Image (cartoon, rainbow, N blue to C red; front, side):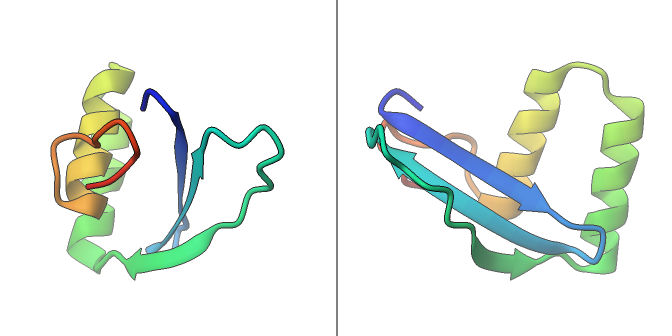
Length: 78
């Protein structure tokens, strides 16, 4: 993202939280619940993490899985 950052946390129970920061030097992380992955999605993600070593592929996979898009715009929107 060109104007900030998006951080995503996926917990072992499938809960997904994200934090979006857009050009704020004083940004304090504020993770918000986004969704819960089902067992199939969680197992597919674990398998992908165990089998894929290229971080760009993993990043693209997670963006598609969690947000349903291939990439974000310059402001982190999807």
